[in-house]
Image (cartoon, rainbow, N blue to C red):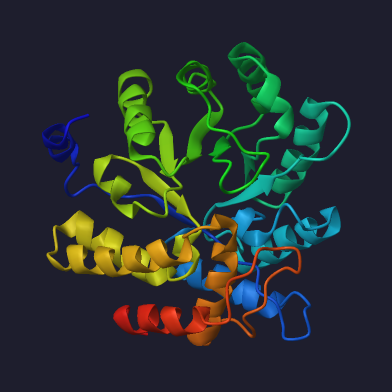
Length: 313
């Protein structure tokens, strides 16, 4: 798509659907801060965004099954039917039939009021498009709403970006209502939007491109780890875009500045950046992350303090 075509493709005054992949906070002693987690879920929901829990930002790849269940319980208690939430079904490293592995976790998510989002597994890396499509069709059968997830390898080794043939097959699965696209590549996502508009306009493309949050201008919705840093500012940005408010551009630029810093290489360390940011603004009891998660350097708080000031906290 040429530059002029991109400008023509912008969807002015569009209402955006946004989800924040909530950070799992830790106390100074290294334990999970359940109170801070529930406060983040409540803050995100009150701002008008949906919550996504047990995602990469919630250390789904490191939590035990019991810990993931606890996060579902806390989310359900906090939201108390106010709106929907999304939760990750993570099967990487588990042995057994994939359909049953996914459905076991999906059933638990649904029982707590959530919508499952399906993390990929490295088993897919050697599969044909038809095999992946058939698996998703079988896994999604019987559920009202499921979201797929294509995660770039820069985020996690079990992830992959589906080829176009696979995407075209997935978009036709009735109970699959959307896909979170985290390639960090504009052109791939723009092509996803073109196919969506031609084939199934109600299908959601949730951008996971924290380095290009303006993808919402072209028709993407979002499910972003960056939105966990400042959910109320994402909600305000969405409001400005809907209303055609000139303040949209400056706010987007300042949020994107934060995104460019937080999601620099190594990308998985963005979770440490998020913990530091949240600690700086008094929302996280410590800047600690899960002990197995990638870390930022000691000077990270200095550069994030500039982001805090730019965003008006």
